Amino acid sequence: MSIDTLKRLATDRAAGRPSGITSVCSAHPLVIEAALLQAREDGTEALIEATCNQVNQDGGYTGMDPAAFRDFVMSIADRVGFNRDRIILGGDHLGPNPWKHLPAEDAMQRAEDMIAAYALAGYEKLHLDCSMGCAGEPAALADELTAARAARLAARAEACAPAAPVYIIGTEVPTPGGATEALDHLVPTEAGAVRATYDVHERAFREVAPGAWSRVIAMVVQPGVEFGHEEVVIYRPDAARDLAATLTGLPGLVFEAHSTDYQPEAALRRLVLDGFPILKVGPGLTFALRETLYGLDAIAHAMLPAAPRLPAEMETLMLAEPKHWQSHYPGTPNEQRLLRHYSYSDRIRYYWPDPQARAATDALMQRLGDTRLSETLISQYLPRFYDRVMTGALTPDARTLLIEAVRDVLRLYARACAA
Image 1 (cartoon, one colour):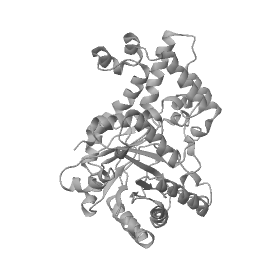
Image 2 (cartoon, helix red, strand yellow):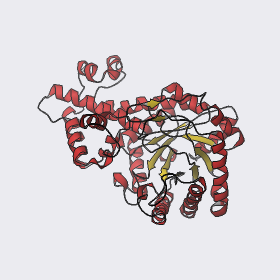
Image 3 (tube, one colour):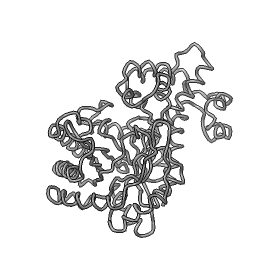
Image 4 (tube, rainbow, N blue to C red):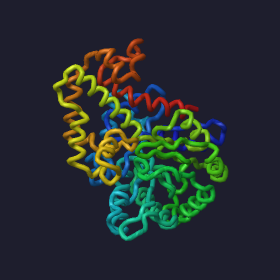
């Protein structure tokens, strides 16, 4: 079973054979295709995760429920020739977050319905995140309440899942999609907090979901890794030494590292070696995709100056529908404009599924077609690909370059995760 890859992470590390797995958190079809192609080349499983805001029983911002997202991923796998049995589907930040504006019981009932939909659809990896307060509650909850709510969700999943899933717990959960505040105060989770979190979850699970507790394989902690709008905090092993050492007292458990986007390869590898073998990445992949789309747009503009510009069309869309960026991007109008397009947080990713954005992207791809793009224009606007195009290692058509941009990021993760 593909899920056995996750179950072996802790035992392999204890046996001196540390390896990791890339968790691709994206609903963009080109990102998923690139992830499957990379996993096929590497001979590994592909771990694809959907977040509670992307995919839920109400459709999320993608318009897909868990079963629809599963079918979406599997259809891409069939098209590229990737074995469905080697796909691990996961649900990320499953909890009341999409409904936290509601009273707690209402939000939790919806969260239960969501995790039931994920479990029924066959998702094998479920990250339980009940760390946020709901209407009338503090923004961050006490560990006891967070654990009780997580156990409640696990019990619902256990009642619905056709096969036994694995669970991820933890209360020090980084903000989905990157930080929204300054990062100068970021510190790793304290060692004592790890044991306290483990103990309080164990008590809660044994009370309402005892069978699930044996399949808790990882805990989300803060290793000192994060990205904001314009900065990245790179992993420092010395600062996380005490945190990493706590795993010796937690057999069968590893840490899951969120927000690893934009980390250098050496930092990713060290995270794996230090006990953070589940490396989650999402915005960093769509950031690379957006960079390449904008480069292709510049090439198309050089070829046909009168054609519409993709950045301008995306700007029009984001200004007309500001809900995904307005409360996140501070500053003057010009500073907000720059963040809308170029922020590490990559909140533009929420707009790619929009019909207007899809039409603009499709029009760009149709203008470029499947013909070979000029080497000189690639040198000018997409220089990262120039050497590979010149040597014949890479075919210079628009779609190939988009997939390659995402795979370039995934290759860093593949090398960092290798045994």
